[in-house]
Length: 381
Image (cartoon, rainbow, N blue to C red; front, side, top):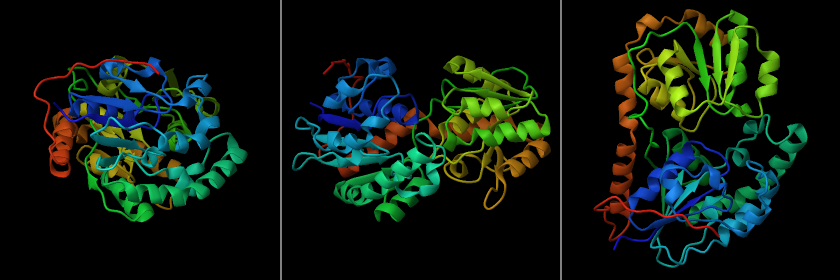
């Protein structure tokens, strides 16, 4: 029988890249389940909809989808008291408190780290978070108080995997530990080019939250009078609409098929923020679209400067001005869609599962690959 794998996830309160990672992690064993303190079951689709997902007692206090900030101080306790007694192996999908889990004696704990909590360790990442200055001050105080416990919890993890070299460097700097890099999975099979003409517009896609710096793209496009399509929704939408000129179009949240069509038709994707890894630029490249990205974070690992896009040096410079310069100078004829697509293919889901299988075989005694696809089920708490 396959080892009992328990994947610990921060929370299912929104869809994002970390949820795609969890969806692939549960396929590493025919005998697996998930623990997450907070679960919006409407977000459990694909394999997740058929998986055993257990939540915590905090679930009773989670009443409005996406609203969990009031429960943030309680999440470390929820992780620390999670019942993992049935686990043979635990993989913690971490970006805030998943490292706080306690495993039974002799059970290996693997940390797949999207990032150590940026708001905990990097004060610059508090821009625009949790209700302005008051919220940022409260989060800053909570973050500073949480650092000793965060580092101590990281020290109890048996093996660490980072989703990018950027995150591995943070782990070394903030947790004083080394981590192996395994890039997250991207659905490059679904995202593929089509025989359609590219059009004269730039694209921004994803959640509209402050740290993604969509404001930079909107301001640059408005300054240049260039067409920009903004696909996504989030709390930054009112601010972005207020600053946008007539060439900026907001299409709101789009489904996967609509987003793929935008990737296929845009002249280039704009990626002005700093991401731990950044799945959106890889999806765009899988569709043959070049990317104009800030030369920071995960983008430097996924965008080949001058070959599949342009990496913009934003260090110490006005980000709007340098993006406007890059957009004004951008020549789509310099880029070959087939070459761009080839750059994205190594980030596939199959590659992720294979690398994680190999990692577990090296780190966990008696680990075996599943012989056949497993059947999953959903249970409530």
